[in-house]
Image 1 (cartoon, rainbow, N blue to C red):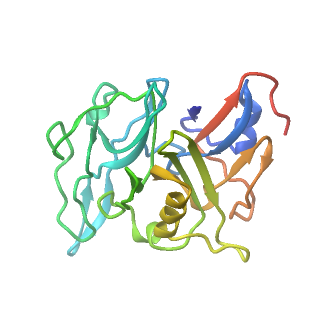
Image 2: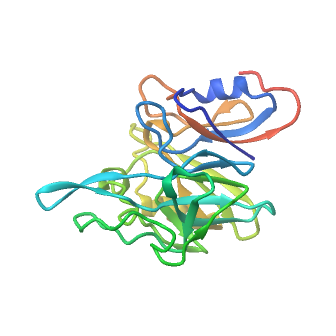
Length: 254
């Protein structure tokens, strides 16, 4: 199980596969990124911080635009391969100061911005050092219960409350990992609302589930074959990070 990030350089899944030295069994697009191909989400692989979770969002509040500092949901995996959903923030962009919280900071659209997260806010925070982690958001399911925290994570309603192509990751109660992609924005599929995505993940037995980057980024290869229909007219969108499952051996040829 690998989480990979190419800072400043986005690549299609085909390119990610071609550059991988191990056989790629499954690969899907990863976390949110900006126009400069810089990740906007927490990324950790083999205890190494690839990208921090310090994030701000500018949203209207009364007649002005204010800056919010949301704690964004992350899917963390420990060395025993157990996983959890938690909400994270990187203090001062320091790799030794990634904090996670049992609940997100209680932001809401149109509300007064809350303080920058720190060691004591939100309550219950502690330093976090998972084996692997990927952020994006919002959370979909925590401990078996649907818990979609898009407002607290300050993820705009356009992405959250409309049908869109979706990518999600989860772990079931018996320890299996599931990666799911859902097509949208075409005649064959309109995509899913977040609640529909969460309900599907729950029906598959997901105990903790996270929404990853979606829209035109949504894409997945299994055993070298593209399994979905990306919504961009040009086909596969280059992405800055990926989640992949590999096996040592001969590389899959694309």
